[in-house]
Amino acid sequence: MPTTPGTPAEPTAASRPTAPRSRRERPAKPALTRTGIVATAVALMRSEGLERVTMRRLAKELDTGPASLYVYVANTAALHAAVLDELLGEVDLRPAGAAGAWRDRLARVLSSYTSVLFAHPELARSALVTRPSGPHYLQLLEALLALLAEGGVPDDRAAWGVDALLQYGTATAAEQSARDAAPHAQDEQDALTAAVRHASPQTFPRLAALGAELFSGTGEDRLTWGFHVLVNGMSDTARPARTATA
Amino acid sequence: MPTTPGTPAEPTAASRPTAPRSRRERPAKPALTRTGIVATAVALMRSEGLERVTMRRLAKELDTGPASLYVYVANTAALHAAVLDELLGEVDLRPAGAAGAWRDRLARVLSSYTSVLFAHPELARSALVTRPSGPHYLQLLEALLALLAEGGVPDDRAAWGVDALLQYGTATAAEQSARDAAPHAQDEQDALTAAVRHASPQTFPRLAALGAELFSGTGEDRLTWGFHVLVNGMSDTARPARTATA
DNA sequence: ACCTGAACACCGTTCAAGT
DNA sequence: ACCTGAACACCGTTCAAGT
Image (spheres, rainbow over the protein chains, first blue to last red):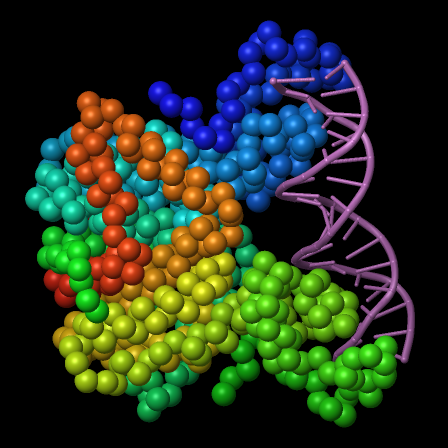
């Protein structure tokens, strides 16, 4: 197995000086390891939210200075990516191998993925920018590709489509982070609703015609519909020829 | 026209004390207004990037303290949303009214939207969380809905679908921000490519079968394909019944 | 080879006091 | 009714010096 770039090997026990008994309260300061750092970061996220998972705060939790963490973690983005990778272990992949219609099983796996991110929408934001590449992510990709193959989606479309499906789930979860974080967020939704409601039917005929329809439905229903739209669409839509012209 | 909540009226000229001649260098310190603040923020973004559009940095630019801005702008997220609203004026809506196949015109409008965000991918990130609600955004919605109606997409699906289309463009632009910001970002892509390349064909048969196909194609081609997938999918996929059960 | 103190260069937001 | 100085409570990251 090749060493992942940017992931320094754990220091051996021998190379580490024996930990000086810390301030007598704590149950002996544990040695720093990448694994331990990430585990502490996950715990910190669960207890205080991702916005508290900062290099400084995490260092405090580990009873050291922020500079020490940079031996194991390249930067804050990498830290958050590692936390996400950890969380992806919670995605329920069992529907992939279960009985039933492949489309529904696909939607169930994707729903599970999305609901994991829904529990931590700030993480979804970072996932859009820093794609995970850990084993859990690979397992998820594999499960989705197997389902698409079972459904007869051509390989070249499945290769592009799996990205679109995951992106859709990720972005939907990320959107939710507004409603979570800001107590203010309802206002923003209201701002758009109000803007649409007051839009002049002369200038905005379609907006006026659709009105509340634009904001209807539960998040769950919209999400599932979207997954089916993507799956049906990619079954129907050929990829552009390699020498495509606009 | 109702007053948008959170947008205080501009102070009248009368209510404002005559500006004390500032440090004699600058061409007379202009009065603070929401419009002026946003315009300065846009200029600052163009010259130094969105990451420099902070309350403190912007205040410095306006020759005042950060506290002064809070009279006009609720917080940093609102500031960024206002900047985005401004930028959306650059989206080319002309294809909506032009001749040609509706699908292609739809794709062209969406491509224009996306390329505006591509020029400022950090803004795309914030757009996912704080949806715009300004006039430019309404015009974009209207144009897209008109095209979907022209294409015979049923109203209820268009209402949900327009969101999916915009989200797809926004998320795709947001993803790009990694490649821009971090000099490191290529590494992350490589990490995933490497992980896929080294995935065991026993454990990950589909991943092994598809391989490089997963990363093939230009961003442009993938984007356009995705738009067509969504449009074709929503033409085919009924919304769930109101009392739908899983 | 790790670990760290200290520093550099910033943040958002609030609040009491000014004009 | 705005405008502001100053403060509070933080950030990420680097680097020289320690062990």
